[in-house]
Length: 156
Image (cartoon, rainbow, N blue to C red; front, side, top):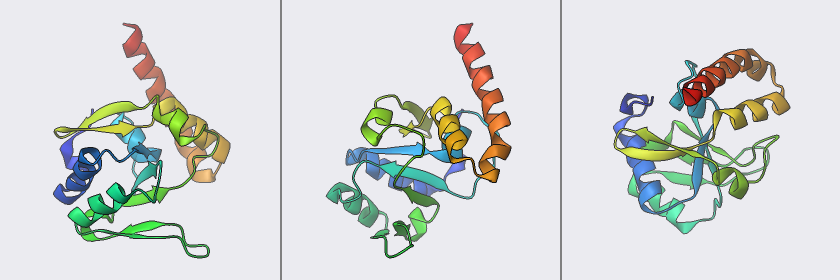
């Protein structure tokens, strides 16, 4: 389903570093839906981490020339650097269980020669239903259709 062309060489290098260093993360949001076959457009890739204070996360960022910027006031945490500018840091997924519970049920989806942990489509749908933002409501019918097709494929 996923192709390496979804990510630049630098972005793949960052994901590889996260995997190599055993950083607990999950690709969530519309990028996760796209990796499962949904034809959607998104401007970023949302990453949810078990622990933003994980030193291995800092080392993975450093290895690709990136930096972690902690939250200040209303500014959420973020990554800075060429190889990580596509990635947004997610600190909470509305309507879902905690990170550990959701992590136990991720899909491992190939991105090039890597396998990345991706939030299941049914959980993405659940979160978007609970969040209820207009942009989420617009994409829900498409996500539900993709989920139905995936479930049909599993049954055959």
